[in-house]
Length: 284
Figure (cartoon, rainbow, N blue to C red):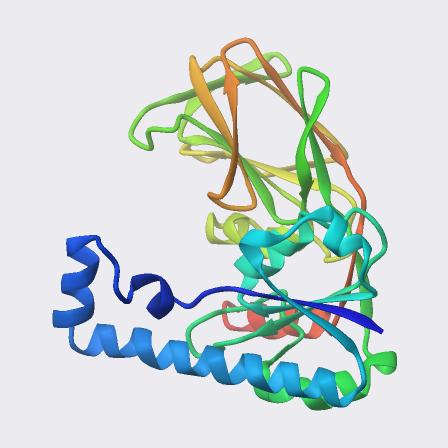
């Protein structure tokens, strides 16, 4: 089996030795907060070593890759993708999977990361992987975005935000016959409806639902709506789209249209339904 392990760099790796004087001062003077950064680094390092050892012992042909070096070519040449990090690493890897390659998320630091899409943490991985054939698999629905009819960006697993790039400025857009002036329009898939959309106060969709959710941020008493597809026209001079967080964004200028529709599904290994149930019980 060809296994691709995608990892992230810890905050300690990114901050330590930084030329930014504010970051350098934080690492030197922040005391307990800086210690947490270093402790997290060690936890993530231990998780990586545990995952790597378990895969090598299984006889898997292993490729290790920093997430910034991902490409579709690398994914296509693998039988299984394993992400070691949090949901951000998982989402970034998912953007390069356009076929039926399955993916496993490993939460490298569960004390400091929710890791909702993760099947297990680092210490649990050897047992989890030994029973790989019996683990639950989910085909999660993803969205596909098109700007003025042209498919744009990767398949989207969590959410899409349309907004003014200045968070203090008004976002203007039209959907159908109704125009809006607010803090932006948020869309989510079923998998992503327990992420940002949930924090906005919206109820999650069933995890295997193929529909999309829409919420008008900063519009008083606006309920979320659900549909197979959505179409939005920008009335914001320099509007912007954000896919699955802040790393992937595209301009959506005044007069341009965004269409969101079903995209290729993603095969995820792990009992996500159980994790979702445990997550939601905290808010009951």
